[in-house]
Image (tube, rainbow, N blue to C red; front, top):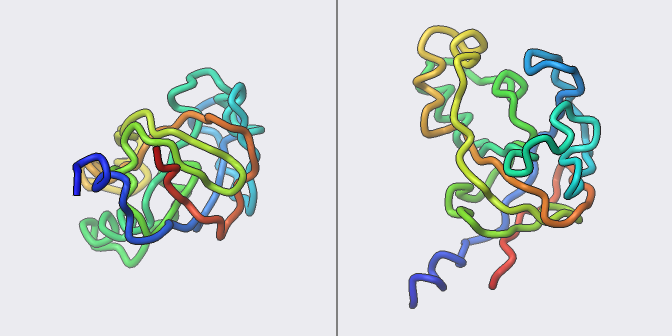
Length: 161
């Protein structure tokens, strides 16, 4: 098997587990947890404070499995995803394997643009060592390639070249 083919082979689709956005004017604003979001190429997530200000960071996604890993590192039973300040939690696939690839979630098409590194807010939100616990587990940033709706339970699937 060629490396390009290997990089586009996943055991199965992922699944959307959790959705949120931040409507407030500051990064410290409230998190709104929802069952569905709309995304667009120009605005990113409808109602989100970023509203397309940075095309490469229109949507942030984190793996549920990484949240579990951070919980174990911090010796916590679980972590509320809203504390991590990401837009989408998915399970069942390795997000980092989507590097520079396009993928479909619900009706939308996204492209991974980079890694979502933790900020100093993780120390405040998760407690002592929260920043370091999140390093390497912060998820990915994405741009919207095609507008659409994303709902809890939607599949996350690679668009093969």
